[in-house]
Length: 364
Ligand SMILES: *Cc1c(COP(=O)(O)O)cnc(C)c1O
Image 1: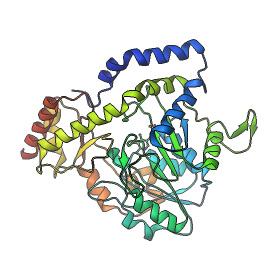
Image 2: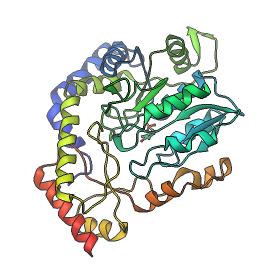
Image 3: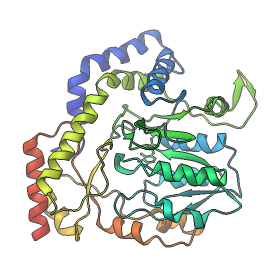
């Protein structure tokens, strides 16, 4: 059994993907070719933001966003410790200090109730993560940010395709705050075949800044009005995402069916993390009281499982120096979470077999 269904997805979309790649090879515009603007237009329309800027990875998306906001040494950015390292890494790369705020027990996402007391004179932005595909509590986070004059950058690397039934009603992840970032790393809900990412905003000035920063801060060729990065997404990778986009909503629907099937198998016997109906279901993650026996049962049955993430960022060796806070909820979850196979490739029988193995492991 595969953890993600990338092989099956390629088998289904082979003709469109191959044709898209062939078109790029034929026109030869490997950097900033026509597929880049095409993809940006389609993605902006998909998530409802005025601008989409494709970039070389999700990590670069976060960094470019912070640079465009003018975040600099001495500044602080509030974020979650329960994420992939790239979230805090981008803050440090921008020269700022990550300030960690603990997460909600039920979702694993940044807890808005704990943000206020960590806002200070140097705070510039809040960077929540929509973990496992479920949007963070963006209404509450946006309210806090508005009151304190802060920007909000959603790290939506795992949540592209999710929607958010908030105050504004049915908006999509990526379009829930000042700036939204996502990743097209192959195993994300919408992946390319290498590295790639995108930034969304409806702020014209920020969009212009981010387009320039992506290409070495150049306002026109060889005229550099700001310090930037080499952050473009390849034309070939844009062609891959373009070929996948028409069936993306069907894939999200299939992920929701798989999640619902897991839910039915588990009932109230297994705690799960997050995953409201609007999730993009990047992961289906359980929180067993003891992880080890469950993981061992899955491994023995030949079923892959992954811990996202075994150590929260504030306790990572390279990040200890930035904030000596303790985040007991993130620490507890890191010791217990386990992500199960998830993707449109899973049959009901596959789900039933995984669930039965989990339940057997729980009782072991
Ligand atoms: C994958 C991921 C990133 C980084 O994306 P890359 O494209 O791999 O650079 C950032 N944040 C989160 C939460 C992620 O899951």
